[in-house]
Length: 166
Image (spheres, rainbow, N blue to C red):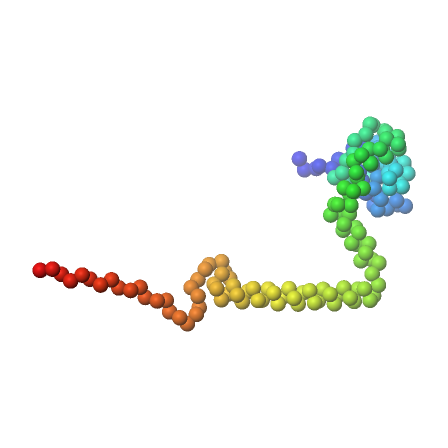
């Protein structure tokens, strides 16, 4: 099945436009092809109709009766621990990081650039150290080769033949 996120009652959505931008809300009812009724009692989103092109569907879903009241939605939201689950998603963490980057000052951006530069130098040095070791012991290209030292392998001792009896 190509799609796993459907517009359905109980689907949690992130509002991407309007005064409630960036808040979560649950779909309570589907009004028509382009609009849904949403409610977010825990995120301070009032019960309102909203266009589908103003929301992003998440993988989170809560269960409550069709067109449940705000009290029922709040109870299902708390029971499903939606706020905790959302804060653990990669999507939420990226939004938080994006918000932090926007709030950086010039000096903060300078410090970040310097820290990345130092990190990259350390990473490059470690890479070249490992590469040098790998090329010496012959595992650089995946095949274990003979060591490149100047010592030649010791020849095997020859077995002495027993004297022939007459």
